Length: 292
Ligand SMILES: [Zn+2]
Image 1 (cartoon, rainbow, N blue to C red):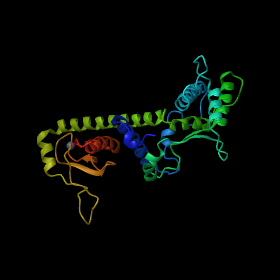
Image 2: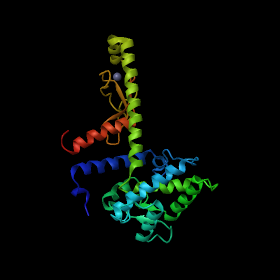
Image 3: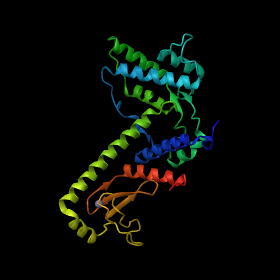
Image 4: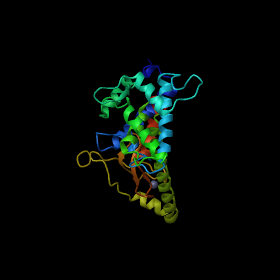
């Protein structure tokens, strides 16, 4: 088995990136019980509406084929190369993995458990968080329900627990698409917000003119001035990336302590936690690789 140190560089960066996502998301959660509830509830959040059955079946078939192909290459298809149905793929899994007598789940243990254990501990994630838990009975039930609904024969609907059982497959290393998609989407929204704030700041600067900006910069008070006794968590002003004045008020730092979260008191540009984290992560990686 490969340890984290045997991985090629690209994979290491990717692995680190995954951990970053995991950390950031875990930090955002108030509840320890399900640190990824935010992530695992995207798009398919609550009750399903009619018509979702087909999407569910597609998602399940693809996920199961990917998992079986990754775990037991060749077993995902019949002798003529035709990929098994979701129902048959579930049977393959049930044959390969003895289900846990207590929970009824078939568990594919996390291959990187030893590498990950530090992160898991630091983020107080439940043990086995990265294991892939496959609820064969519940997923088979979901296929029954959705099949009936699709053929107009049943009144049953897919329920939240069916969706959760599907989303739980995302833990498998061959998938992890939800985690990544959520992370990408968050990053995109944060970048949009950042760009909007910079635009507003530039418009304000144009409105007040250089002289007035200069005057404001000179007379600016730092509302979060560092003081060893009165404000030990304070920060000195930093240079603002938009107006260039030394008037960016840091109200906090990114996860790596490298990039400030806060707002410029002259031009009003505001940098949020997510963008600070992205930039801080970039600087942190540069520092790790000695290219800082
Ligand atoms: Zn500024």
